[in-house]
Image (cartoon, rainbow, N blue to C red; front, side, top):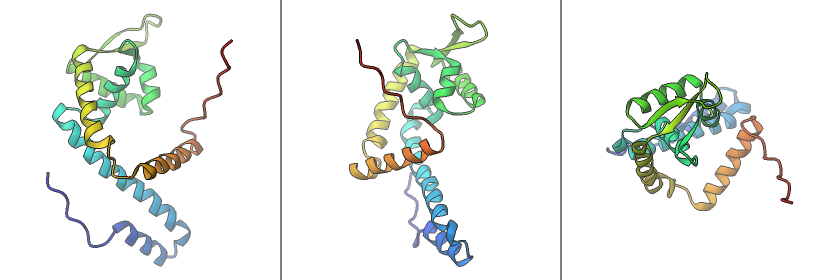
Length: 178
C-alpha cells in the first residue's frame, strides 16, 4: 500500500486559522485538540488494519479474542465482555456472531444464569489471537511513532481526559493481607 501524499499544509492548523478568522477563538484550541486526536486515531487504525489484515481480523474481532485470551480458562460471560469492551451490546453480539461462524469462539450456557451466555475461545481462536498479537506488537505497539517519554505523557493526558469524562474511577486501595 502506497503512503499517502503529504499535504503542503497541516489541514488542522488551517482549520484553527479559519476558526479564529470566523470569530470562534474560544473554541479554536478545543477544535484543534479534538480533530488532532481523531486524525491520530485514523492513522493508528490504518496501521492496525494493515497488521491484522493477514489474519482476517478487524480490531473489534481482535479485541474480543484478546479479551478471552487473557482469561484463565478462555471464557467469560457475554455481559462481562460487553462491559469491558465499552461498546454497544449489539456491536459485541455481531462481533461474536462472526467469530463463532469462523470457529474462533463458541457460546455455551451460563452455569448460573439460564438466560445468559458464556463466550468460549476455541483452540483455533487462541492460536490466531496469539499470532495476531505478535504482529500488532511488532508492527504497531512497539513503535507507535512517538518517543517513550511522549508516549507516557500522551497516555497520562488521555487517561486524565477519560477519567474526568467518567470513563473509569481510580481503584480503591486494597487492604493489606492479614
